[in-house]
Length: 81
Image 1 (cartoon, one colour):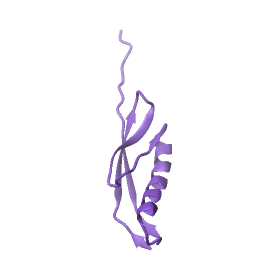
Image 2: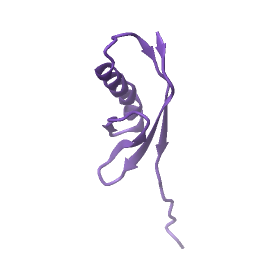
Image 3: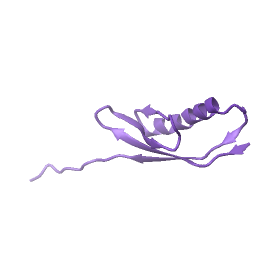
């Protein structure tokens, strides 16, 4: 089994579109969108596996750790007096 370096994926939430998306990644060509961060986290490893398999002619097994960093912003407002 071939071990690979960690792939870091930075996710961001687009409030207008209502989706999490790949803001940046160590994996060229990674493009994932999902309505929730949980679904995004499930889709990322599958998409990375597809990209690795498409670019690897050896067909061997691999093990690659993935770190997903999710960034979202929120605002708290009070109703006032």
